[in-house]
Length: 235
Image (cartoon, rainbow, N blue to C red; front, side, top):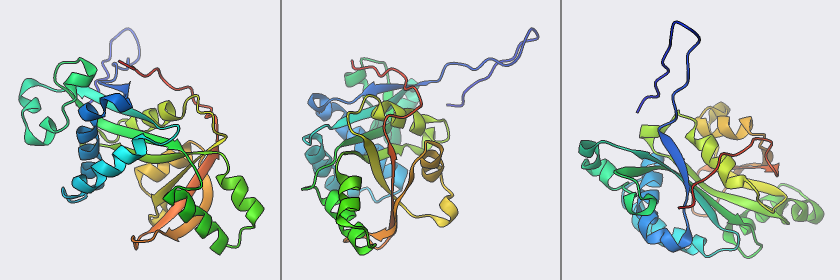
């Protein structure tokens, strides 16, 4: 799966085409991509496999929300690799029309609204942090919630997360994008590096969601992104 950068005597190295391509994940095709997407999420987060049974109904609920959109990253694998248990769960051939293709990355989100749990948690945290009603309204009035962004371990470190994120946020009508991510010491992981690189700034730090003891950070930035997104296959 490693990218090859061939060299020639006539000139500098030439970057080979990426083996990963992006596809739109449509609601009507959820029966084809939802299981591989949740499997990618659970693997990337190193959660127990039992998590999948709880997440699939939640993701189905999210699909029905206003402004929902999802993007996936797919790649081809060999005939032998396609039979491996860890990869066979990621097969997405019937959706893409490809031969032995697997889903290795997923990102989705939707228009934020006041009646959503995440929105209510954010507004509660902002109130406790001393923000005024006008400030809270300004933050939560018109945003796209980046709900999930995950890359399978076999494809991490290849720039797929940034490609997914820029494609997901292309042409959004909202004025801002917001997300929450676990706090990590010195912000030293790939997720934080990506968000900072794309201009996300602090909205609320060290927040604890109901039912989760870990501290989280809310981050946001204005839209549109300055980065030009690549085209996404909507096959």
